[in-house]
Amino acid sequence: MNVTGRALTAALALCALGVTACGGAQDDTGTGSAQATGPAASPAQTTPSGGSPEETASPGSPDDTPAPDPTGTAESADPGASSESAAPATGGAASPKPLAGKVVVVDPGHNENNFRHTAEINRLVDVQTQKKACDTTGTTTPNGYSEAAFTWDVSKRMTALLRARGAKVVLTRTPQTPFGPCITERAAIGNRARADAAISVHADGSAAGNRGFHVIMPKKIRSQTARMVAESEKLGLAVRKAFREGTGLPYSTYIGRQALDYRNDLGGLNLSTVPKVFIETGNMKNPAEARLFRSAEFRQKVALALVDGLQDYLR
Image 1: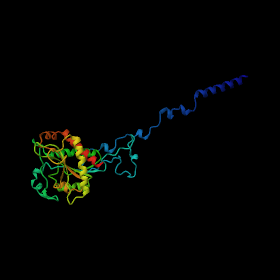
Image 2 (image 1 turned 90 degrees about the vertical axis):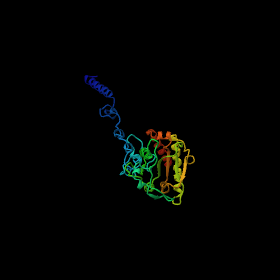
Image 3 (image 1 turned 60 degrees about the horizontal axis):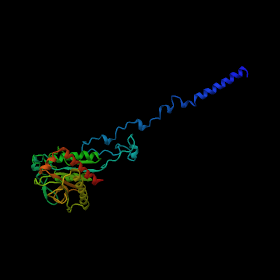
Image 4 (image 1 turned 180 degrees about the horizontal axis):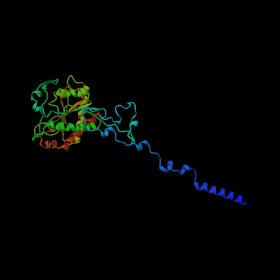
């Protein structure tokens, strides 16, 4: 082979070696390769989750604030959109809250200002079966802790718990309510709200030796529907069960049967068109129960038990 042929052969060999050394196409080794930098981030990986609206909503919002949307969508969002399209970026659709869409009326018994308005609260009102005082002052523990203060504290705690579970809560009074309201108006508030359930929170003032709680349900009168009375009984049974389990308090030793009492003399029940019960959470004159009522920890137990009972009924 001449010199030119040998040179050509060597050049071809070097070229072949060079291709082999390259190892393939440029995309495999270039700096712009997807493999060199890893897969492109998906929108879900790059978008901060931020939390859904219900996670950031304050439980102390005004009473007329709508319950948070369990899907996490704004009220102006397309109502036809699926829950999947509104899922948080962290993956998966937000779980609906157990009481989403439900309206609950919480009625804190009495009013701490009632004693300043004796003329107003002593005005007689018609409760269908008789005429009764517009409202009363309620009872107290032996050391002066009032039923009205207790019922407001428990109702405030219930409101926070109910809203956290998605319910819209309507309160019949606040600390700014000058007196009452009258028992007729307390019932009317629940009726106007078209509540899915209503509960009036009380504590009894019986003899010191008596103890325990009881639930009061409507005893049918002519103006009430059979359905309202039947639903109120279902609500009462659910509340009784949850309250016993949640607080450990016994059934009343002095009134009702198995902590159930049926009455047709209470305006709050007689005038209600929605499922409603009263609960006497215990006896404030009993020293042991009075000590419990003064405990914030126990009042939280009371509130949680009542909310659990409402949820059991509404599910």
